[in-house]
Amino acid sequence: MTKNDRTAIRDLAKRVAEIAAWPEQEEKRRLWYAQNSLRAPRPLVFCSPEGSWIELIPEESLACKEEQAREIERELRRAVYAQQHFADDRVCDDVYRVGHAAPRPSWGLEPTFHHTETERGSYVWDPPIKTRADIDRLQTPTVVVDREATRRNLEFHQDLLGDILRVELHGDWWWALGLVDEWARLRGITQMFLDMSDDPALMHAGMQRLMEGKLAWLDSLEGQGLLGLNNGNDYVGSGGLGFTDGLPSSGFAGKVRLVDMWGFCEAQTFSEVGPARHEEFGLRYQLPILERFGLNCYGCCEPLHLKLDLLLRQVPRLRRVSVSPWADKRISAEKLGARAIYSWKPNPAYLAGVDFDADLGRRDIRETSGICRTHGCALEIILKDTHTCNHQPWRFDAWTQIAMEEAEQVAG
Image 1: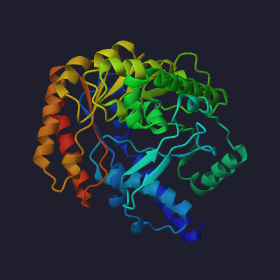
Image 2 (image 1 turned 120 degrees about the vertical axis):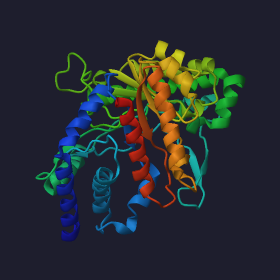
Image 3 (image 1 turned 180 degrees about the vertical axis):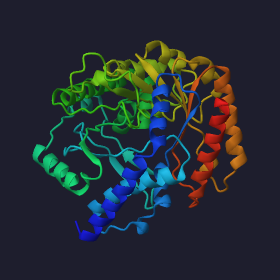
Image 4 (image 1 turned 60 degrees about the vertical axis):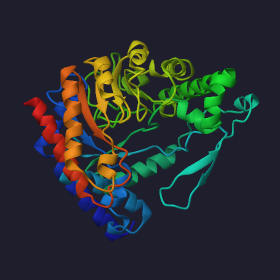
């Protein structure tokens, strides 16, 4: 790493450390602990620009030249930018996490993707599971960590940042464990939908194989001591931070178990699948996975309002449920009540569209807040899937200010 790159990164790290020491960070932590106990005094707000980060922090604005340095710079700049611009409940702490050196887990059969030439454009894929016999060719994912490479990488970051931030080795091995979307990639979405009627035995065999493989993979992570707690400043589920006194679970003795962590499943490609088939082809295979975790989140972009009775009845220790832009707000509020967090995702088009209508965004948030207040819901407002802001970064500033104003109105 060049001297100039090192200096730029260390200067950013010092700024992150300064922000992490602001008194309001502790107040935000307190609010998330309350939220995850279903007793927050107001709705919590979290803004996740996701695909829009490239417009908020353009590549040409980066100071570093080498790619490894630029990757670190991006992460630190995002932390600083969010605290300087977003009036939300995002927490900034003085921790910098380093992952293990390990190859991506594989089922042994991979789809072939065909992308458009448009930047961030669409794609299609050729799924590898063509027949029932192909299921037998699936391999159980393995976890093989290069311990020496991990040690070197950790030492590199400790030397670079360790006197400014707390550099920690932390295993972030997955986002979701829902299986359904993995099966869609292996089998194809259209064929998956046809199989539910024409060849249900094949789909059951495929989902059973994925469930068994995923459980074996999780057991391997746990057995090798590669898991990390996600009960602090961790993005859990499809939105929200993980601060909770409910984890780790009783019996924790320092080595992280699955039961000490938040779990998460979703079934986005089942958006148009009814409750009965969702249970038969999806939830049945997700439950043994969710059973392993101490607290659970469910759902992402799929509308779940017609499936909430099913989820609330069967998912163990369900604490956070996604209410997507395509879900019925009122039915969702009636079903969830105070039983689980109402993790609402406003329609990102209100921010990302050609024109930004602040009044429309405010009315949407006010309506949802009122519905949730009527039904005693623990509401959180999670802005995500904003893959553009039409190159007007100020929209995020305006939206988070509006959302926070409406949230504070609920608190009185």
